[in-house]
Image 1 (cartoon, rainbow, N blue to C red):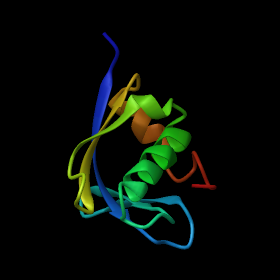
Image 2 (image 1 turned 180 degrees about the horizontal axis):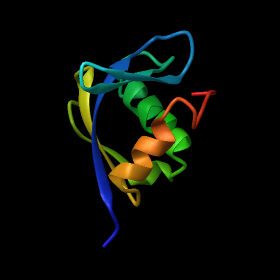
Image 3 (image 1 turned 90 degrees about the horizontal axis):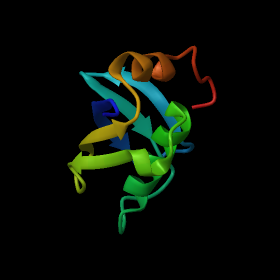
Amino acid sequence: MDPVTRLTVRIVPRASRDAVVGMRSGALLVRVTAPPVEGAANDALVGVLARRLRVAKGAVRIVSGRTSRLKVVEIEGIDDAETARRLSPLAGATG
């Protein structure tokens, strides 16, 4: 069975650029340029996390909070330790 990681994510839509900012109040802070309209920000969030974690977009799933800025996201195929390593500031200076 593939490992699954669950993250709490706070999303900031309409940002100047897409970026994983870091941890804030126990949640991963992610900025996306997309507006929170018709799922655009959610789609952008999935794309940003998939690129940063080097997994397929299909492996990233929003499991709660689809209409909220605070979301719970599951990532399949990567364990907690590897997720933390790939999200560390040293792992991806480009966001």
